[in-house]
Image: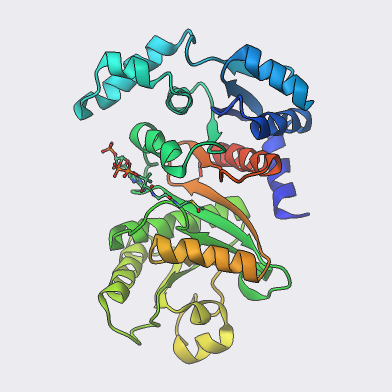
Length: 333
Ligand code: ACO
């Protein structure tokens, strides 16, 4: 059974309620019909009921039984605005402004999540990553034990002996342009937990750099070295090591030469990149050149499950991201 089939089965076993703020968008509607028929999650679509129903009919999407909420006229508008005002007044938010802001479907969906009316949120088919993440970062915030939200990919490389028979988890590939050493340490620990809970693997985390165990000296290397120390000190129970080059991380023969005493080198299945440029370029290199399946970006570190879609996503991608979000909501990832 493939990784996504396993995720679907876990999602079906304990149905979570996921809000889709882009309820009038066509790929979202097609995906909603499929999620409904497969019973992967309960859905709430945000938008105008008339528009949603007539578009769904045109597209042949069976959205029967799915709740539709219009943020412009929802009965809970004032309650959400009041809570948003309470949470953000120290940042200059007024009640009047909150009442206006909360009509934005992304803020409305985030407030539904925050208030416990849904278990997860998926959006981004027509919004940028920043548009989606900002309300989440401002309102839902980070989970206990995690100082930062980041984005991981589950990479499945065909015919590959590295990682877990070709399965590796990469982070951060989506959120933090230039994390500090402390933030990088938090990303490493969170990604180890994600690999354990979502992929069911024993995580071996490599902190990537252009240097292996002191072979080069530079402030960029120093950041990764410091992050490794912090992560190891914070979670001595986890296998985290670095700094190391990619070949030393995944290839046992290179590891034997460059990092013979490491419990991670040569067998890493979680790769933590030093910044967003390397993380984002890195996953795309593997995806394109090795024809790997890249599942993500999936957000981690939020106190509740929120995920972003690529604006180029297909309806099938939305189905998969909703299933992953449901599993994250179940397992508190
Ligand atoms: N984790 C937790 N909290 C955060 C994080 C984070 N990673 N980043 C920002 N915050 C918090 C801040 O503390 C602040 O909270 P406060 O308002 O309560 O004080 C709030 O979020 C807003 O912070 P800003 O610094 O103003 O955040 P900004 O609006 O500049 O943007 C964002 C944050 C959207 C995540 C930005 O860093 C970003 O755009 N990152 C890159 C995203 C991207 O383009 N990725 C590549 C595409 S994805 C792909 O290709 C797969």
